[in-house]
Length: 448
Image 1 (cartoon, rainbow, N blue to C red):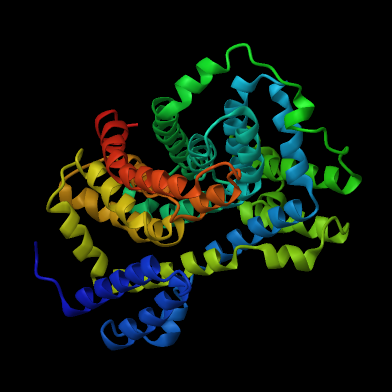
Image 2: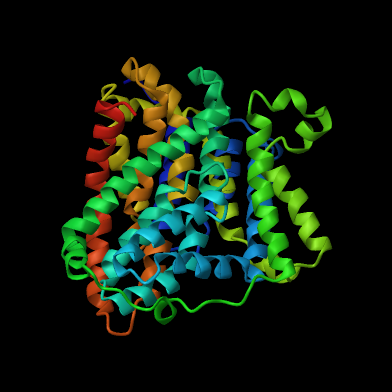
């Protein structure tokens, strides 16, 4: 490994300090800390002015995240999402064995269309835990179902985590020789779905799900007992549902080879990314006053948005100071084209167990991919990206994460929450090792 410059060492140390602080004190937003450190490191060691560092702020990413989260904050505020969830749960028809599957598919769908993993779990956890109590399923197993589904779908091109990942990948694409970014986004989403679904379903079955299914054979209860029929959708809620459907169509259709030539240039310009479409639709919803706009703005995850944008600024300064190259060299020194997937899964899992997966870990590791491929003499960029994404999120059933904490908070009164906390903590920490193996198998050996 080549000697590391002082600027590179200092920039790497700054990132490590931010990660450590984010692990021990969640009150201190890593995004704001990162910007402050970036200005200091840039000014003293990287010959960058404060103005130059500020220009590194990812405005495009900020706008996309703001547009998407505002649109779905309105959908949540006016009751559309909760009512949609209630109708979907009723699809089980009273067959208790189908309830975990229905909840898994529903959480997957909700996360995929745009709210993201945290918002989907916040929406689903109260419903899922109430159902778990009614059908005799442990809160631990229900957490694996809900969180596993949400994290598996988190890399949808419509979801905030997927937007963060794809925005970083788009900047790396020229170095990696990647051209079809739309197809790549869905491929990475699919890889996450496969790996995380298999791991979480295996955990569900091994730790009591198989026995529970056996006890439920032939057990049917009246659907109104577990999911009372909600009121019909109002006009404003139908308009909101239509906007969500339009969001998907407006993003997907212009990317189809057969459709794109038929669209006017102005339409293609307006629908250039999911954020621009979200702002257009949000404007329509505001004009029709479908939700409380001020409350919706307050409900947006500003902490998370600033976290990922701020960390990105520090990563950019690290790159200019040579810190990313130094980190690449360290990982490459113990890795090969196949084993690098295991190491990435392990490192991201360990850090994510105590820090923000999408806000800190993903922006920290994804920029390493081009350098790693060069240093280790090969490797599949999609596999490495998937290893980082999956490794960072498999641990998020831990009670130290927002998702695990939400499920504990919503668990039934009969549950021993201290025991639930311990079991989820052990599961989350174990997932850093299991995640390393899964990434090695799925993305190293099988080369998904």
